[in-house]
Length: 138
Image 1 (spheres, helix red, strand yellow):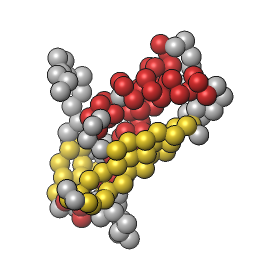
Image 2 (cartoon, helix red, strand yellow):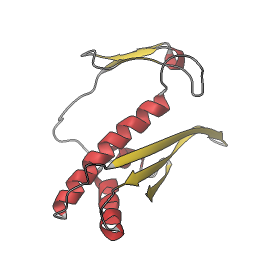
Image 3 (tube, helix red, strand yellow):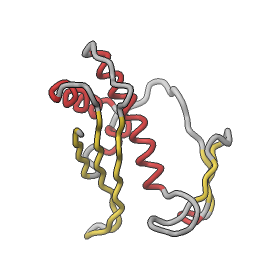
């Protein structure tokens, strides 16, 4: 397990009601209603929030990887994340698919950026060995 020597930031939230509740951050920048996956109700769910967080973090990690390769990420860089909630022998689990778009970069450079980012992104590190993860390059 990786050990943190210096805390850079701490995200703080207060959640009530579980999947049919609400969550807000201590600075009120995040204030969302929660609903179960596939629900018709207003609000989002933990899987969508996880997908958004991982996508944003992964784009940051790709930017860092690109800079070390003396490349620039295209302005149209995007990650479409899919987080599946499923059940099986061991109970409930997650799996993930990240579809990465790096328009204008050659395939070899784009693949190298993705592979490097997956080694450095904190979300990738947290999920490594815990859930199935796949990447596709659009």
